[in-house]
Amino acid sequence: PGKHSHSSSLLAVTTNQTEQHNQSRHSINCLEHPSSLFSTINQFRLSDLFTDVTIYVDGVPFACHRLILAAASPYFRAMFSYNFRESTEGNVRIQDITPWTMKRILEFIYTGHTDITYDNLFEMFNASVMLSIKELTDLLIKFLYLQMNIYNCIQIEQLATLYSLENLRRTTLQFIVDHFMCLYEKNLFVHLNEHTLMEVLSDDNLDIPKEEYVFLTIVQWVNYRPVEREQYFQSLFKFIRLNSISDSDFVTNSMRNEKLVQKYTACLRTLKDFYSNNFIPDLLGPIRPSTQIRYHLIVIELPSSDDEND
Image (cartoon, rainbow, N blue to C red):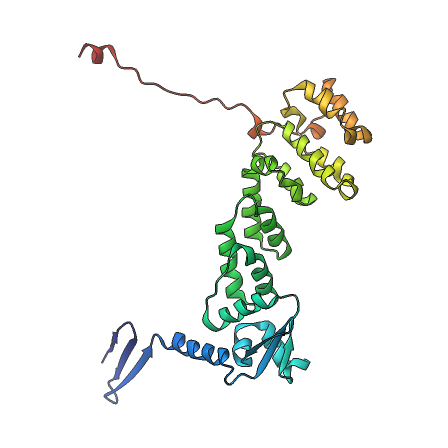
């Protein structure tokens, strides 16, 4: 008695023999059957054959099969299973998605693949989350990792925060910290919200050559939208590690004379304590390691006298 199997790229055959009955049971498996089946079903969709529901997006109709939609999406499964109007009617209207995106979503549901570009990436992601298509959402998250750069990292962080994608948000925050000077030089940091900016400025390894850039960042960030952001100035000011500022003139002149600093007594008092040498560690904060001068030991091996004689 035993178990034997034979397979090719298209067909797998498994044989089981039982001693008691001396009979063989064969199991055959066509490896291409699922893809072939779904390819045919997709052709049915495109030809409007055997469809039983029509999705309307901004007036554009998409003929579909309830069974396929329900199998691919808990959103549609719930819609067709419970006492919603759509469970008995043949028409479904979906909002907050463009026809272009709906076409790609359906293509993915029926075939497992679709085309995306960076321009439609965020729209596709929002739609995949709304329709609860996990497989597509997971693929788009991987695509976000690959496409992350200084121009989209803030938008990705906001997306990760909105949908509680902790791993993606953690990676994006680290990217912002590691490339902060690039964001500063291109004035992109002004699009951070107050909570994320505080997280970034609190990082010991913030990518800045001098602590002075933290102050400049805060002032520029507030002045970008002064009406709504000025309320956060005092809280942000506490993230400046004055102990890391080596240029005393910057403190006594640039910082002290800044209008926002002049407006808040607590900020002026902190600066006064600093340049009068009455340090208050809780206010000044620890030295930021990333702003300190780094010394590198270079070892040069010189030839010995014996080597020279040779």
